[in-house]
Image (cartoon, rainbow, N blue to C red; front, side, top):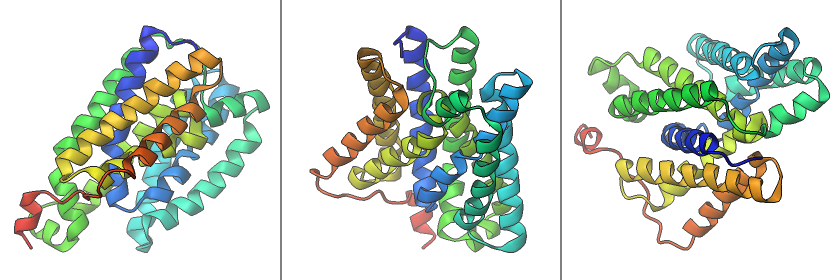
Length: 266
């Protein structure tokens, strides 16, 4: 993979968004669901290839539809998010494997190569900024709904709509990261930096900042290493993220705390 300025900008933006979203995914105990949900992109990628449109467009559409389906089933059945995601993921993976051609399937699973176009870079940076900004705007409501949905409703928070918004932002983050990590590894890019940050941060703000930094270092470091060894970036991105987690094991465990606004209620 070539390491162009467009790739650098895109990887930094994607990494920052993945780190921020990953923090709330970890706190919502979506660690395994994050990896499974990323596979919902495969049917969209396969259909996009057949229809001769950009694969990321097809992936984003499939992920958004998947997020809506998961939210609807979760709301109607009362099942946990990871349970619903596991069912939908299995079906999506089977369909995607059947309709995606062999060579394109490998790229969809492990990430693509080559410099990003101007349009890809612009959409990626804008999308990443929008995702991170919206999650940060909702961070107090997300924490409150996580700690006590009943108190959140009493405070005027529409918990169901908030959960849907987070699932949509989560799906968009996956779509933005598919270029570097692919459907097989993007879940790891979202979760590992957040787990690393949770271990060493002392509060939620610190966790968000550290996760964004670790994720950005992982994407840019993995892309740079891929350009040097002429390999796909996806596996190397996850290896760098894993190395950051291992390094965090040598630091005293702190554990991020919830914001003061949420602590006052309890």
